[in-house]
Image (cartoon, rainbow, N blue to C red; front, side, top):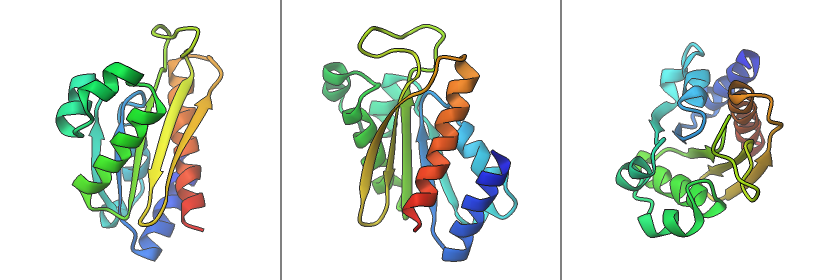
Length: 157
C-alpha cells in the first residue's frame, strides 16, 4: 500500500490538492497511509475517526434520525459523512468510509465485509458500495483503504 499511498500523495502535492478523511471501520488507517508519506503535510488537512454513531452525529453533523433509519453502515450515512466533512475541512477532496470489519456485527442484509466509501471533489460526489471477502478484520480494513486510494487516483484523472 505504501507505493500506492506515495503515488496518491505525490499527485496531490503536484496538483496542489488538499484532502481530508472521515473514517469509521478503518479506524484511521487511511489517514495513516496518507500521512506516512513524506511531504503529506502539504496536502493532508484533517483526519477524523468517527467510529461511534455519537461521533458521527456530533463531529460530522450526521443526523441521528438518518443513522437510526438507515444504520451507520449505509449509503445515506456515508454520503452525509463525506458532504459534511467537505464543509468542515474545506479541502478539495473529502473521503468517508463506513463499514463492518468484523469479526462480529454483520447481519444477513449487512454482512461482515460491507463497506461504503464516499469521495467528494469540487464538482463530483460518488458513494461506492463494496463487499470485501471476510478474511479477517485487518484484511477488510486494508482492502477498504486500498480501494479508497484508488478512488482518489481516479478522481484526479
